[in-house]
Picture 1 (tube, rainbow, N blue to C red):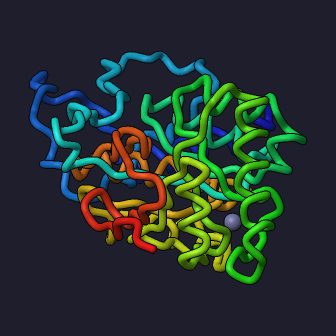
Picture 2 (picture 1 turned 180 degrees about the vertical axis):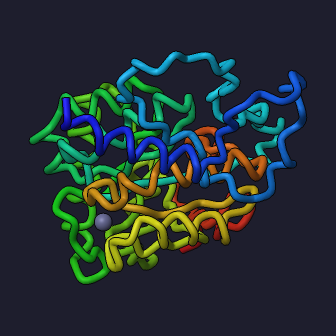
Length: 284
Ligand SMILES: [Zn+2]
């Protein structure tokens, strides 16, 4: 079994690195671990799980290997510690469902602004978003810069997407995000007529531009505060890769990811929301 030797060598090196004690000195294994500082991401338990278990495992397996789970924060009554994480441009197989898997594993929610055309192409995915308790929003039918188009076209973009969402998911959309967050008075008026509140954001990750998961996560954790609305895009694998870091990082800061429906329970159609408390009432 010569081929195992490199494995054992690697394990020995790992043991040295991790400081696994050869002798269990005192049995006070309940010694408090050094206070967890902010290095929440340096999870230590990357153990070689595939270790050939021929070792006489005499060691008291003192690895509790559960995550250092601080009690998960809950939304305040007024949602002042809530953050709405929002995703544009889906639903897209391969990325939207991967993001949904992560949210399901953490038991928290987000909002998905869907392109009508994508809803028609991937209705099962749109339904899954709704079935798992996330907010389904309107992101126009063809992802146009709405202010560049006549009123009738703007109307069609919004109403056709509302119709598609309702047809495929049963949801009557309450929220829309204009493509490129580009809107004017005609867009907010058409939104009001379509029963839609408009959402902008106060935290822009630019995830679509740099496609760097660490940067996306850092932007959210640095900038999001209670009441924030964060914009991302569920069509990039790099955004999928940022998701765990974002959710776990927010929770560690006492912030709770929620849907827009939770963040702003009774939005006013035509009003533009940048955060829970920062909005422009509809005026025309
Ligand atoms: Zn978009």
